[in-house]
Image (cartoon, rainbow, N blue to C red; front, side, top):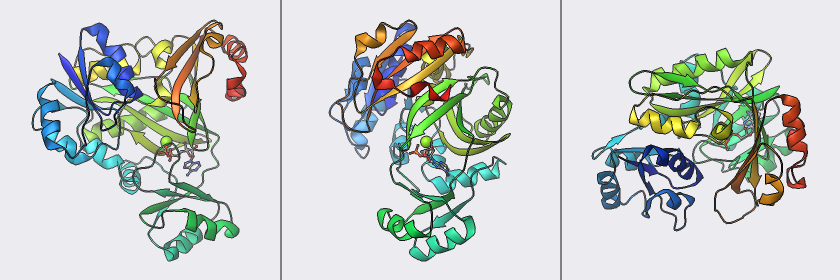
Length: 365
Ligand SMILES: Nc1ncnc2c1ncn2[C@@H]1O[C@H](COP(=O)(O)OP(=O)(O)O)[C@@H](O)[C@H]1O
Ligand SMILES: [Mg+2]
């Protein structure tokens, strides 16, 4: 049995690492020359416009999936003529435009930050009047890790914010003074079974995820599950999905969903009975899903721009080290470390023993 993955980065690599023990083979499709996913199987290096390559890829796998939400929908349309693709491409289409995504949430009675479409300087003036300060201007498509976003805090920074922005095809959102950011990762398979991980509490800096902590028994879990069930039902979704939210008091405002395995679910590799990667494989194969039960308390710390000293990390009990085999570059996620413990106090102590590279990582505890 062979699974094809559109996108060949670290997420494809971790899906493969989870599926290889099941006796599966993998093929990754990615235009880049060097990809971390080549460690798990054949790499088809071609553009998403290359129909012949897409057909050859589809013909060599039993089921295809993706690890990247900006895979062009037309590429998936080609692939699905030749093999099953899960999740179906609607889930990609709906998330590839932030306006469409927010409208989907609102149709499903999932609250979001208030937003306005901005295609001109006049639209920005109107948006500021409607939303007040601060606002965040976001590109409607193609953004990731905070790229394409500008925060406008007051009248003084409207002009400079406008100049810095793409000036077209933007969404202005109220900047939410959230109590915390949380996400839920869940999986559903075609036979109907659905499983949910404990929510993660996430800390971003500069728009990039820094840390995720699992939160077993959290009171907001039920609402997060309700939201994600509405998405599953509406999208006819099979596979792993992640939903990122801002929590304000007892309410959750949906920020975005990812139709794939997600960085805020990396803690599940060691911190849950079956990881998000394993459950994604199980879901797209439609075989019984694994338990999502947390194994104690976990922290996932991203390595951004560089890797810390591996052996210094590994001296700390409960630490697991993941290098994505990517070249270092500022702002680039090149690996992560998961710390696991049986109590929050032990977790905190173990994080404090990590090298200075991670200083401040325990602040969200
Ligand atoms: N409306 C908002 N209010 C407050 N913080 C925000 C808002 N939008 C984005 N952010 C911050 O920026 C981060 C990245 O934004 P996000 O919309 O998730 O874009 P990306 O697609 O780059 O992940 C969020 O996780 C959050 O920390
Ligand atoms: Mg995000």
